[in-house]
Image 1 (tube, rainbow, N blue to C red):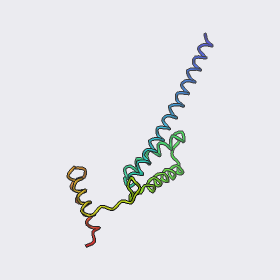
Image 2: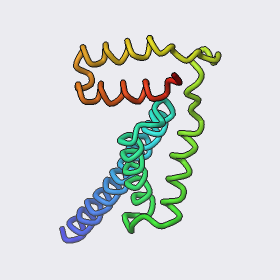
Image 3: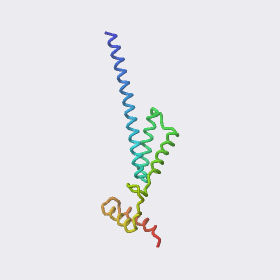
Image 4: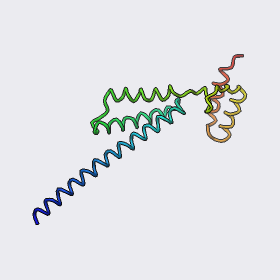
Length: 141
């Protein structure tokens, strides 16, 4: 009976160890996928500071997991910033989905779009006035 109990405890400990290894690898894979997804999103919106910060945060989480939660090193930070800068540099905001050059909207179109954003409550009146001023400041009289 004792031998059976010893074998049972060893088997249980081994099963628990396998489960913990699997769980850690699954968590690492999910962290990597989240980081990669945010890098792809950053290519579409490279000037979004919140997206850049979230991508960096997810990269740090993933890097920490690859180091068995012993922290993120300076080399990790450099690698993360290289990834983020590459994602942003790879984005070409002057091209549309067909990869043909796009024409910059006219002043009237930009102001009309800004007005629609304000009217649909996507931006506040203060944001509207500030952006309108920026657009008009670029205008050479």
